[in-house]
Amino acid sequence: MVQLVLILVPITNSKSSSTIQEAGYDELTNDLYVKWFHNDVVYQYPNVPTSVLRDCETTQSFGRYMTEFKRMAHGKTFKRHTAFKWNFKQVEVCNEISNGNSKKLKANPSQLEQLQAHTAIVADTGDIHTIEKFHPADATTNPSLIYKAATMEVYQHLVHDAIAYGKENLIDIMDKLAVNFGSEITKIVPGYVSTEVDARLSFDKDATIAKARKIIALYKEIGIDKSRILIKIASTWEGIQAAKVLQEEGITCNLTLIFSLAQAIAAAEGNATIISPFVGRIMDWYKKHDGVDKYEPEKDPGVVSVTTIYNYYKKFGHQTVVMGASFRNVDEILQLAGCDKLTIAPALLEELSASSDQVERKLDANKANDMDIQKIDMDEKTFRWMLNQDAMATEKLAEGIRGFSVDIEKLEDIIKVKIAK
Image (cartoon, rainbow, N blue to C red):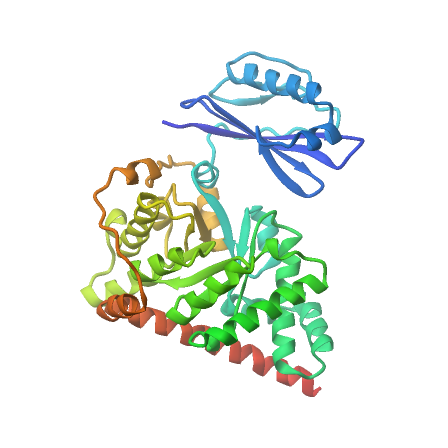
């Protein structure tokens, strides 16, 4: 069993804004990691640039710290730097760190902590305060999430700012509002923030490209580089082709509403940065189609779909990141432990945080390499035919686009009322 213990180590250098914030040890593989936060950028040991080390402490000092941490991990006690005693079974505070108070952590890590050892966790919400609570690597939003957040009193300042910016131009206001929410989220997460293109443009390649460029320009106006943003686009053929053009321009894209291998292959061949295959929505369709209440976790059609995509990508060396999305329960999430990323709603993050049951890795790139998988050459005709033959994917893609469009129009109605006042 892989046991990963997470330790918060608030060691701060007074000469710079640098903190060793989190450390962990895997007693099975003997692997060690430390996350180093420096000027709001996250580095993970041993991949910490020398320039950062020099600004934080001397490289020699950092090396001494790492040596002590390794020796601690083997059951020895040292009170310098860390003030922790560690013996595989428990984490015990020896004394208080000079630069802050230590925290005594439970011996058994939560399922969320264990999952993070295998998979990058992304918060699937537009609620900024919820994102702050879970400290995910990235965050995703969509029109439905923005609509919900925009109706909350706490975020009305973002709405009012967008209205003032747009000067009664509804399209400009809507674009600015999406960027306002994204901007706030970039202050919390160290990685990507996804901002979605208007779903009503899903079958218009040129309009999608233009909208994406506009969104990136709006972020640039407020000092946010395009490297922090994923443009989220529905995975129609037109959307995938738009993403291909944007990727060539250095604008990273998240192709969403993935329900089939055909969509996933086309996205990877277009060099999309990330895809979001939907797990729960696939299960919903099959439950209704098969007339059942539930599936065994490993036989869940949504889990099977994402697993198939993951294995295909790893088998044929595609660099596009697979980020499972749209979960209905924790079992679906745990069956995809090892997936590149998983974007998870707050309620399920809470559930994972509350349990310390064992989490096992399910997806493994090395195992995928040895699988007998047929390569598919994708072009438009093949894409459209494969999608046509997949009733679930055809229906759920159309339904997803319609659903996002409805929530955009609901939000527009709210904005219209505010403009009129």
